[in-house]
Structure formats: C-alpha cells, structure tokens
Image 1 (tube, rainbow, N blue to C red):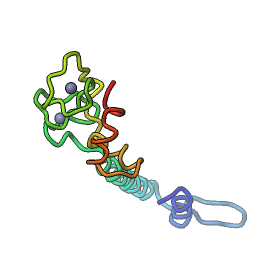
Image 2: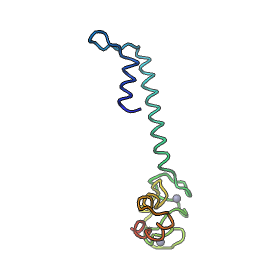
Image 3: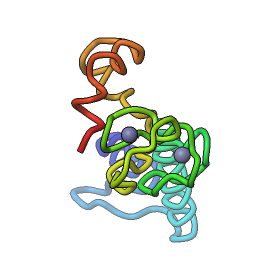
Length: 130
Ligand SMILES: [Zn+2]
Ligand SMILES: [Zn+2]
C-alpha cells in the first residue's frame, strides 16, 4: 500500500464529514488495530525484499557483511582474484573478500551483461583483486 492508498483507507474507515468538519468516527482501539496490521504488512514486504536479495554464504553460512570462515569455497582471493581455497597467496585481505550477501561477481556480471563463467575468465582480476 502506498501513502495515498493509506490515507484514503484511513479516511474511509475513520473519518466522517459533518458540515465542514472532519470527525474521527471510530474508537481508538479500532484505529490501533488498523495501524498495527498495516505495520506488520509493511515489515513482511520489507523482509521479502531484503530476504530475496541477500542470503548467508552458500558454503560457510556467514551473514552479509561478515568475513568467510576458514576453508570456505565461495571466498575470492584479494591478491590473485581467484578462488581463495585454491590459492596460497600471502597477504590476502579477508575483510576485502567478505561475504556481501550476493554470489561473488553475480551483480557485476549482471551489470556487464555476461554470465558468471565469462565474468570469472575476463573480469575477476579487475573486480576481486584489491
Ligand atoms: Zn563463505
Ligand atoms: Zn590468491
């Protein structure tokens, strides 16, 4: 429900016009019920949006914004741009390679209009190296 619909529904349910006056026609309990239902609907909408976009790491299970667990096969290396599990690069930055909530490169590949395989071949050096 957008703001305008919300205002219309509020007016229909709770406002009565008498002469040139707007009068709140309902008791406060009903109004409170209406507003709390509205809020819980909006929370569910928000959850749906965020829940779809961001997930925990598919391998190690950390939350968006957290550093991958040791040995995670999703983590990229900030030194060589490859899969961290496969390389032994020294001085890589685990914070730079943290889990964002989206598969590494998926958003960039989408933006560039290539699939993930092509992205890894051509662009992982550019995007994953620090
Ligand atoms: Zn991970
Ligand atoms: Zn590496």
